Length: 338
Image 1 (cartoon, rainbow, N blue to C red):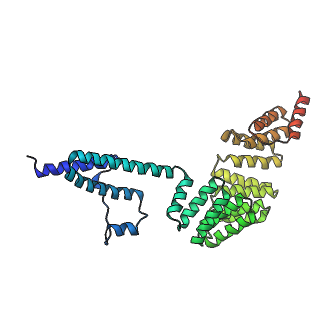
Image 2: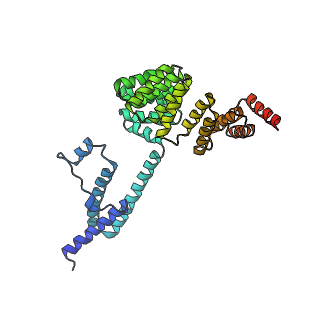
Image 3: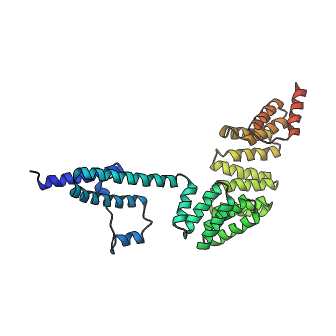
């Protein structure tokens, strides 16, 4: 005859086994979920956005509860068959969710479908479109997000980025400014507003925005790099070199900064320093066609025609558009030297 305590232990063991079928190792002791007054369904209605882990624990609690009832009603074999059916159902649901979550675009499209009045969902879908180069679709979603939440600074910022990708710089500048009106400490918006001004040739305005970004975030590496580019565009090479060095002090492996620093040195006819920076860039990024091309140019002007020809050939293999006149000039001087 089996005692009540032994029967209770066996029942607990069976429930724990069912739990392990679904989770692998979640234990009953960890399933401590408290519900507010008003009942369980009211809890789900008010807090539908609870964490995935919490949802799993609640679901497992229900499964264990009903598993015990089913086993007592239908017996051991029926319990096993029922468990198998439940596993198949949940496996199918998992497959469906994995299909949705396999891609950023399908994930956010699903979010918008289920929550069409959530600005964050439309913004996420817009970003997913933008990452795929679908700027028009991205702009449409950002506008929908702003209809729902007109003071969403991050959406104004991403909308400005979408316009910038399309070359619509005036529209991009307008959206970046709106983002900054709502959120004056938006560092990324200052940086990208500076980029839009630079693309329009408004270098003084670009420099001002980069400096604002750096005032807010003194270790903003990309702002130092972009500020150096703006100074270089203005012909202020010493200032450009200073900003590139500041970027490299924060990120020594910044290959693009080494390339642009080399270009600034080359314009000052400091060829040894320029060669050093291009070589550092190639150590960090061996497939940098721009570094090979600029290194070839510097080798040419320093009279090292063999090395120049090798670098030009490497740049061509990597698809860098090199003027035919320069290639012919390097070949002619190389023949004359031989």
